Image (cartoon, rainbow, N blue to C red; front, side):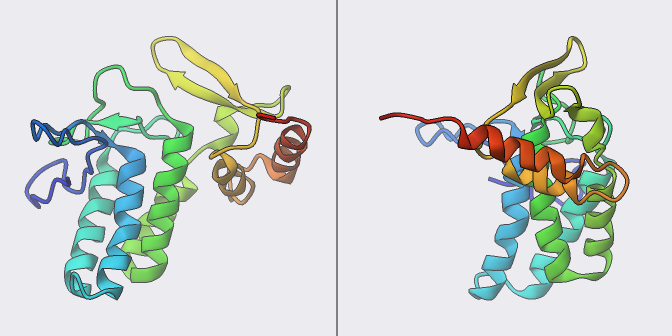
Length: 193
């Protein structure tokens, strides 16, 4: 479900979970918003919504995102569906921010103009090097404002997108070496039989 009320401070928030038995909505997830932005394109290309409606949804969502409280450019993992504020004690999430930024950039390329300008601003404001452990040559797993960084992304999984976005960052790059190191670590591990 999505907050489709253009008057709401949480316009464009996409719920992370939906209880099919009770109809209860969970909090919004920043990654879900990224997937939602990318899905607008599929909706337009399949004639499920028209271009103008998709553009207005994308622009409204981008405006909401640009007004949300961030930490060094990173977003909280879970957000309040109605106002876009931090939900509970949600962490500042690097992977979910990366998935959001991928959706923003996809929508920006498709729609251009103001949508692209905001998507570019959001992408360029993420301080990847702040979330990076330079000695271990990997990203931290999570950050809580109340307790700091914890865990590390040391293997190959969904975080590949973080390394690609961070390597290409204009002002906050961690360089190609970070990606190469992550790839090398991943090739040395085996899973299952």
